[in-house]
Length: 316
Image 1 (tube, rainbow, N blue to C red):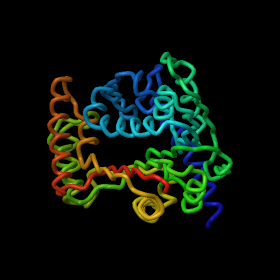
Image 2: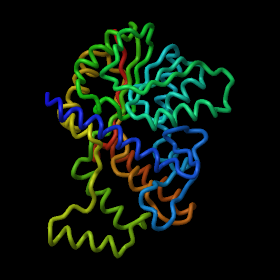
Image 3: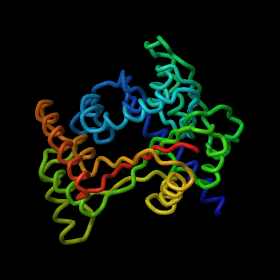
Image 4: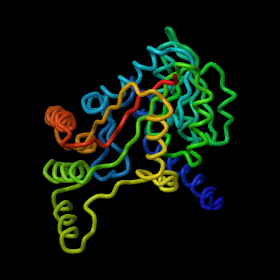
């Protein structure tokens, strides 16, 4: 293991997510990843390409079902929860609101600050369990010191961890018998899923990209071979070879070491498209409902695979 490269990647990871959350919370906005219930509706100004749309209603249309299914499964399990790479804390906060005892861990100081702020401002106090946040490199924590852990959860988390096999082994040893482990990972587009996504992004009006710019990108793609769009990766995703070694480790662990309850694939193309649609709300929401329905049908028919995968497993 190249220690210098690892150190630089970890520092880059901190800054990547520090910068991301700083942009997301300007002007006292609350992003969905910080609080599902109190997220602030926000459409950025015309020339503001760095602040993303925050739209709780759109979230419920295209992705809410899957996120709430995860929450409901963990709530049903109850008990003590470890939220790995918890980010600004929406999942941790919502579980604590349902009486669970939650510990959230993340490398970024800015996202942990935001998570703590959301906890302190939380107005939903009935049946609140307990919630603690820790700003630490998850690999540096002796996770086996945690006791009576009923659930370990990671939302787009485990493929950021550099010593993943060791970490997952420690998770297994920490988890109580019958305990639940859930991972939600973005596993990448198939070529067909990517094709559908790019076609829809070209056809539909898109926030932050005019049709003139779309045609310019298309021209550069056909004549110079430049990509139409690029997926962004954090430094630790690049370090752990996202969609490569880390995905294989995750699959081997969940399918071979644990007892699989179910596997869910979703969002072949609809989520990225719907979250960028430009226009009046009635247009955006109705198009999103249609595309989401088509997306789910194509995944069910196994024509599309899905960009996201959730695996629910328990320890025998």
